[in-house]
Length: 77
Image (cartoon, rainbow, N blue to C red):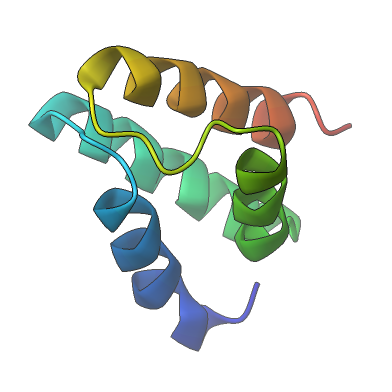
């Protein structure tokens, strides 16, 4: 992911999820890790849409979506 897109993808993801402050920090850390390892978070976001995890309006749905983000980012190797 390009450095310029990092704040943009964070804003998009946080607007599509109901996140607590702790969950926002976790998402930010995953986005940073994805950027360092070359994972395109826009593709991850699109996969979450295709699978029905996004958008979500409650914290339970957001927890599931955040777990999927972790799965795609941390388990991508």
